[in-house]
Length: 437
Image 1 (spheres, rainbow, N blue to C red):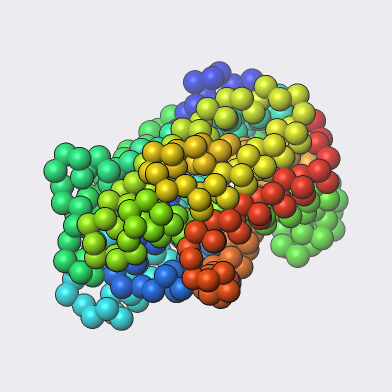
Image 2: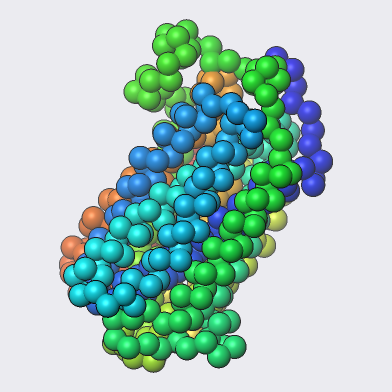
């Protein structure tokens, strides 16, 4: 097997640039879904249930994309066709979802329409997102892999920053931020329109600049699966692959469970927490609630800035376990702080700390896992299966959200404390990892 050549910094950048547009779409979804469904008429105790579909679709779609792309080759490559199809579908759905309340349907019909649109949105975003991780595994050597994922993390957070601030900016330039009861404000609708346009342009750029290796050249740089392929004759059976996965795959998965459990509650309950703590309202039809919704985008942008800055610090740690665990601990402290802060500007502090955890969650798991998977083969399938460690905890958190909210006194800020405790458990779980250089 030949050593993969070093890539230029510009080549590594091009490899992941489309991720910028994908993350704008993901940021608009994560920052506005609870706001959209609350505006449409959803009860706070049922908000988490609307978040069941995105991870559920992810756990189904990502392994399929990974497996199929492992076996695909056409004139456009192995991973890029799936990237482009997913992005095109996401653009269509991004133009439909925020208009759910403007179509003259009953509340129940609007909820169903919104759920179906959300399902297709997350399916397409997942389909577009996964190929970027696979491209790094396919084409980047071990020496540059940490840098490649850090660039991907930077672009991810830069895209998040743009997506998060769109509603605030559009309100600032004069687009309406209030609407009749049950209708999503124009500031949110136009945010999705512009985000969709940027997404497709970024993906077109990546598809034009990145040329994947053809099968013969790919085989020269990537080791075949030694044990699994001999047993399964290259079938890529998911159960067998999981059975033969390295221990690091599962240990990182445990860390992932606590991390994504926490962030699911951030996406679900930050809007209600900020509206109640800083604006003193829970009325979704009020101007104050919609202002809080815009401010949540600013807070998430602050988180993204903190994540971008922290992502430049992470490679400087000689001990990756220490960097990973410390990042999660800082994020846990930030989550707990959000429940007690009542000034909208002071909210910047906890969200900067949360950004530290987010930077580590984006970069560290895939560094540990792809290093551990060298020589196992089926890289795309394994990374698709590893996506289960992102989706399953979100599904569990969403399913339990309404019950836990009731048990904690129906205060949405209490769910942020629970998220912080979960991240601390994640930091403890990091101690069980082994770092294969």
